[in-house]
Image 1 (cartoon, one colour):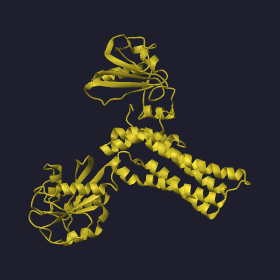
Image 2 (cartoon, rainbow, N blue to C red; image 1 turned 180 degrees about the horizontal axis):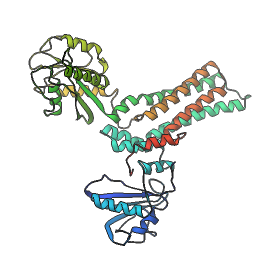
Image 3 (tube, rainbow, N blue to C red; image 1 turned 135 degrees about the vertical axis):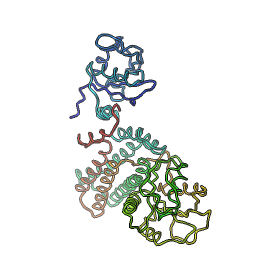
Image 4 (spheres, rainbow, N blue to C red; image 1 turned 90 degrees about the vertical axis):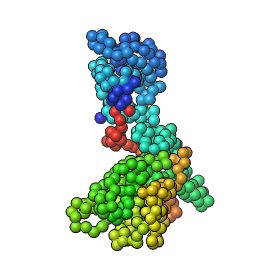
Length: 450
């Protein structure tokens, strides 16, 4: 059960040595609690003002000299009285200050409880609350911008726009039901259909951004795959610019899966080197090949490495048949030795020499090209959250049904039920019609102190 009557506290900065640490409180008793352990009377302190003083223990001994800042209700992040204590940034001294705050009457906060209170006190909606954690965990500039836009309310405004348009349409239908003598003629019905189609198109376009949105948020996994001794490990080392994988002339050198994070063109990727695919009786190598196939199947992009100095082997041809062409880049490696001996039917093909680092820039451009369906714009709104995607698709489904029934001439009484169901799904994105269990699940993924 969510209890907003208690005053919560947390260390809001990472534990460790640094210049300062922040201990934060929120709740109606925040000021009174700190007043017990601060060297000055803060009851008359001004809002949004910082004060220098000392945190004292129960025996009035100085724990630390700090800077204390007040944010009084309702002009605070949570909508409650907030006190922030900036103390020296050592592990021990921060913990001592935190303990004195607990002894004075506050309780430790749960994960994301400050943000949850901001939501419950209507300072932000649920999509904005979720954006805060996305902002903290952003792995690239696109994710950072998407989270920032969502926190600023861009997604909320779009959802509210859909809601207003649907409410207006439902109102027209309900007026017609209440005053049947007024009626709605064919021209007006067509106008309603056109308006609903326009809303549906906009909602679908927003839903379709999820494919790019989830890539922006979670990053992209790239699996280097192919048969033995084609240069997969050499390619991994070339991309990483270091000798991460063992490279020898012996076939089947790589037996296990190697994973490394890389940054290419402002985007983070997880690069995965796998065992070469071939028929073998070696139990260890068989397990490596099994893992290779699993990684390749689950990856976002496959780099299929082929030996340009040789004709395609039976293992190459077998592997090519099972690949998803849309998410595969075929790479002719070893062009320093020879041009490709054959042609292959792939949309994305690049020629490189991993050994001599030739053609890698072309490879990087091709990776970026197939990473996103479209060019990423800083101002574009993206759906990056599965919860938002499911709710939006639910709203779309109800609106499609309403449109279908309207075309059949079914009574407005039934059509408005579907429109209201669509509105209810949209409301879930903003945090209405959300159960406490779902709220707890959402905020459990947040940092403590946020």
